[in-house]
Length: 366
Ligand code: TRP
Image (cartoon, rainbow, N blue to C red):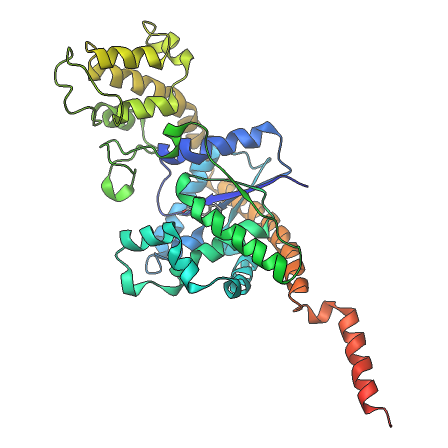
C-alpha cells in the first residue's frame, strides 16, 4: 500500500515555534526521508472560516503567512503538494456524505470540540459548520487516502473520529477508505510547548508566542523575558527544571552539539539541569544559551523566508499547483465514494442496462 501523508493548519495566524517542534519539523524530516509516496500539506481555510465566518480578510491574509512559514521551514514544493482546502470542492462533498455516518452525540463527545466550544464561549450559539468540522477533517484525510497524519497531540480525537467514519463507511458501502494513523513527535517536550509566560499553551491572544517569522531581536527579547522558576531568586538558590519553560524549550530544541558550540562547560542538558537544581547557575546564563540555540535553528528559516518574501507571486503559484494536484487526487476518491454509495448514475452502464431490462419486462404483453 502507498504511504501517504496529509496534514495541515488553520490559517488564523503566523506559525510559532510550538507548531514547528510539534509538527512542522517532523513533516520536513518525513519529506526528506524519501519514505513517502505522496505528501499533502493543507492550509485549512474552510475550517478556519467555521469560527471566523465574519472575518474572511483575516483568513485570507494568513494563507500567505502560513505558506511562507511552510516554505521557510523547509517544505519543498517539488516534494510535496501544498494546497488550499477551499479550492478542493470534493472535500465539501465528502463531508456532506460522511455527516450521515456520525451522530450529534458523537461529535459532542469529541474532547477537542468540547474544549474549543468552551474556549470560544459558543455554548448555545455554536455555528453548525463549526460543530461539523471534525467530519470535514475526516474528509480532508480520507480524500487523499492518507495513511499517516503528523499532528500535535490536540488533534488525536480528530483522528479517532476519522477512523470511526472510515470503518463505518467501509462496512456500510464498500472498502474504499483508508484508516489513517496519527504521528506524534517522540520528544515529550515537543508535544505541547508552553508560552514564554509559562502558560500551558502558546496562543496569539495571550501574546506569549515566539513566531518563526520573528526577527533575531524579537526572539532575543522574548527569551530574555521568559518565565522561569519563581523561587529561584539568587543565582546560588537551587532551581526547579520541571515546569520551567526555559528548560522545556531546551528539551525541545537542544542537541549536544549546541553545548560544544555555545556552552562548552556542559556536555549535555542533563549536566546543565543538575547544576541548576543544585544552585549556582543563573537564569540569565541559561536564557542566553537558549537564545543561541533558538537563533541557530531559526536563522536558516528566517533567511529562506526573506527570499520567498521577495517573490510572492511564486508562492501563490506553488499553492495553485499544489491545489490542482490535490483536486485530481480528491476527485478520484470522490468517484470511488459515489460508486460505493450508488450515486454514480451516469457512469454506471450496468445500471442503465438493468433498468432498461426491468422496464421492458414490465411492459411486455402477457
Ligand atoms: N485542525 C487542524 C488545526 O487546527 C487543521 C486541519 C484541518 C488538519 N484538516 C486537517 C490537520 C487534516 C490534520 C489533518 O490545526
